Length: 321
Image (tube, rainbow, N blue to C red):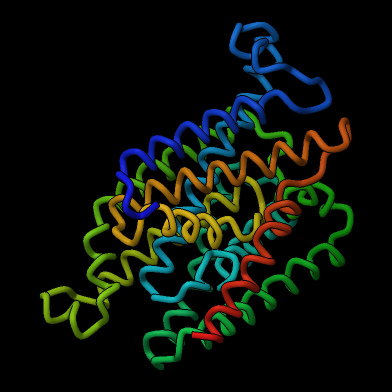
């Protein structure tokens, strides 16, 4: 696949997103066939319920996919992703605290809180990874430990505020249930702006892959590049988590699949990671709505079912290397 035209692969992924989107939009408590969707019938149901959810899945899938690809480039660790190294948990704890403890705050405060929580985790990882020169495998363990701390914080909130927690339960499971156009307008500017910044910085990611000494020899400021790229990754992951909750493993699996398809050149890898993340989240959300309607299974359960075995596979592969 790596020898095929990148444009062809990107086109195939885009078609996959379109097909997955049409199929996902049709499933639910009321089944709508693809022909009905394309014909414009059931427009009220589609425009007010199915389409906003579909757009959210596209934006979040792209955000998490690109965030994971950036982290893997910056840290040079195939196990790096927003959830595995604790960024998602930090964002989740901060967002849950805002929802539960300060319910009177405007909705725009949730992405800001999520960004701050993710930033705290990233600062800790930066100190361990780049100041102390910890090995990549150790970095993953540090991220898991930090994620466990913030997960414990989320569990404390659910015990300490049992009544208020009801407002955050669906969000904490990682679900696209109940999303509407207001969520899209909240998320869209962040994804567009920081995806554009990430695409502008693809050359820096390619250079960082060569190692610190080579990058510095080519005139690249390694420290500054890492800080900027980590900031972009944190924002993309933080705002995505703030909207749909703690969806796991999308940021780990999507970049790996994309890398197998298009290789390591980030000008192609980032769009491929975004499209792969979209497909994964559309499939997970469609399965959640379509397996046992009208009961809905959170999409986060399916992303974990897919991602956890893949994480173990990567861990075993690293041990053999």
